[in-house]
Amino acid sequence: MHINDGVLHRGDSFINEQGVVSSAPGEIELFEFAALLADLLEPLSHVQIVLSTDWVLRFGFEEARDHYRWRSGSESACHL
Image 1 (tube, rainbow, N blue to C red):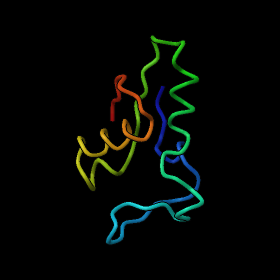
Image 2: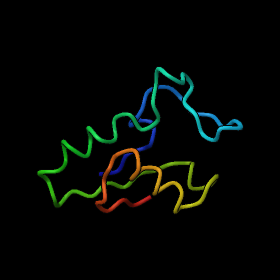
Image 3: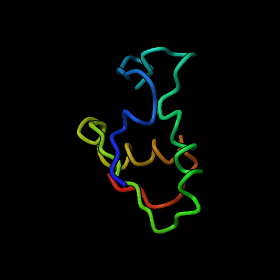
């Protein structure tokens, strides 16, 4: 399954002195729907998620991947 990071949360994100934050801190959490998606796909072990994100360009592959795993709690394969 190929998805853009924008389908995993509402709104936008931006960078400030705290790092990457949502466009509505306290109201919208970045990757807020990642755990829901992981739960829905759990019975479908043959499905892999390919996440397309500009975060790779800004922060590098490892940080983008690790941020996704931290938010979703998923240790499954994540391809960026």
